View 1 (cartoon, rainbow, N blue to C red):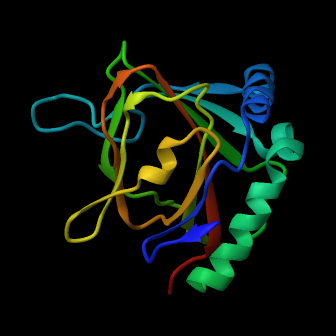
View 2: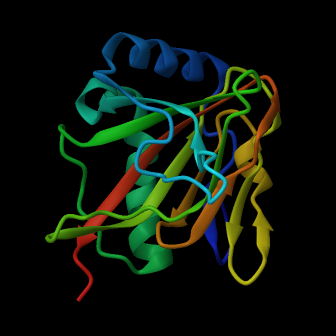
Length: 190
């Protein structure tokens, strides 16, 4: 576990066998596929800001496989960022994102937010569940300049960021990039 002022990271938290187990479980239990570009909008030229396949999965479906990283992320939210976050419920959603070179998958700069009047998304946990290394698909934060987060490139690694910070994934050029995203909620900002 290493820290950076913009994010918190866990290098190689999962091994290849655990990654495969989580992937297989998601393939058996996901309940919806989100359409490409969903809620991300388009650029002025009409191209999608978000080109990625997203499978929606309930926390309860994979809790035994991911509860340890979720627990560590909650501790980090409080201790390292000072955020008050709500523990996950069994009905919380996770996004399983698949980026491929074939579809030139990417996700341009965006922030993670909620329209719910009672809570906000405070932190975003990203776990690299790629079957092997890939090319392209680099993860960046933006805070007055691009900040490359190379730690998320390693399969099995995880990164925790403030959800309101602009972030993006550059186009995949070779291979497949898979990430599991969990949005950590807390009381609405006042």
